[in-house]
Amino acid sequence: MIGNHRHQCMGWWFSLILAVMPAQGQAHPPSQNASPPDNSSSSVAPVVTLGIPKKTASASPGATATQVQVGLGIPKRTSKPSVAEQGAAQVRGTLLDSEPVQPACFWPYHPHPVLRHPATPPAAPIAVEPPLLVSPPSPGVLFTPTVAVADGCDVAKIYCPSSVVCEPCPELCSSVVTPLCAPCDPCAYGAWNWGWANCPPADYRGAPYVFYADLEYLIWWMKSMSIPPLITTSNANDLGVLGRPSTQVLLGESLDHDAFSGGRFTLGWWFDPCRVWAIEGTFFFLAEETRRDLFSSSGIPILARPFFNAQTGQEDSELIANPSLPGLFPLAGQAEVTLESRLIGFELNLVRSWLYGANPAWHKQYNLDFVFGYRYMQLRETLTIREDLLVPEDSGDIPAGTRFLIEDAFATRNSFNGGQIGLRGELRWGSWFLDGRAKVAFGNTSQTVTINGSTVIVTPGTGTISGPGGLLALPTNMGRFQRDTFSVVPEFGVNVGYYITPYIKVYVGYTFLGWTNVVRPGNVIDRQVNPSQLPPGGILVGPARPAFRFRDGDFWVQGVNVGVEMRY
Image (cartoon, rainbow, N blue to C red):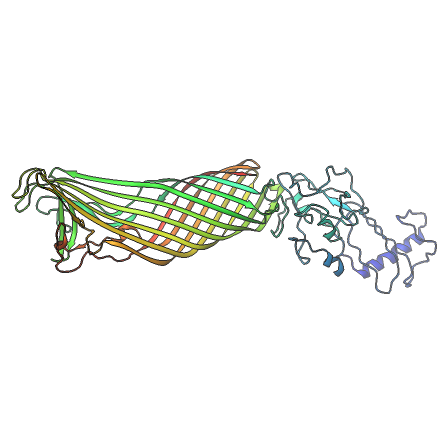
């Protein structure tokens, strides 16, 4: 920038040259009262600039000289406006006076219709007078200034796309500061154009729209559930009791599902054409998935359900299938273990644009948004163990054909309610894009556990006898239990996709969703059993086992999502 002293010196020397070489043409001839340069403050100092004009500082406080400025080429910003002008230039969402005005690239689509830009730029540069309006270029082309149109705008001012932001003329035109804006050289030459998204150029995200909807198909996997040993087998001597040499666990340690199918649906609405604030709602579900494990035997091999005998303090078992053995009647039977799981979730968020940037020369742009709102999730699971036992032949007092139907059921429900914060962003390269999101919610999880058991004995010619309780679900731990606990729900996701049109994009991605302090059916099973209360008609003698106690742990789902987003 040229200071006052430098301008006075330039004016003195330039006047001297004009006096010595009167035949040379001048851009602005001196007045008739002009005199040779001296130290007087009444001299006239015409200034001629070629190429890109620089700022011209005002004369010294005691000077009365008139300086005339002729600008050729691309105009640059003049000096900072006065305090009065700054007070009149309060434009909603624009940058602060102390911050640089960021050029607007408007890549790669047409600007939002609320922006008033001239239709056709002139072929040649225009002088500073009359005022100019910079028009958005095609990618890689310098901005060419054009004369402002008198559509209710203040034609005494000069505008630039980074200044004309959200509302149409004339509301904002008269509020924009007087000095010229710098042309969007960074856009033309490949540098990044970035800034705070207080009220960014309307088209830095692409084509204009205010409504958007996402439809996604989910293929997710759920964390396996820990369980105690439920089904065992062995030779006739060991009877499926844990810890004995030939005993093998057929089902235990953990249960997991195959992939879940589901959907996720998002609706969003931007409150303004600049897309600074939005409200967004998302609902997702995983369809109920049921895992079934069936074990059956006619007596050989032996099938059993192991447990720890609270009366004897040793491992024991209940037989499902066994041959006729001393002290045991023969059994042919089957056991079915089912695990049902279902997960749903909903969130309602406010979205605030935070950062943005664009580089048309590289066909790149990015945006980063701040997200905060409310999240709800619910996980329902039920673990059921059913036995169907048949006495194949008469054995003492038990006639052939007698059936034993035994069932244990453990159901859990976890409901989360809390607030969440997070970030989401998108990086575009031509029509391709990569986006990501990271959110974390803090709140309360309501844990509910329901335990039921039943036994039914059907005796031919006698009738049916039933009673509460099975094997692991007995009167000492049956019932409904509830408590609240603090939980954290983090979510992370990334997508890669392609813009088919400015208003439709398709993508494929990955999502991870976690949840702390979740109770699951396998966590609440107590292996210690007091056989004295086994139905029907059992009376508790000794320790009250099994007993209920809350045990929880971490939970997660993760998987692939395939989706499409439509904008309007």
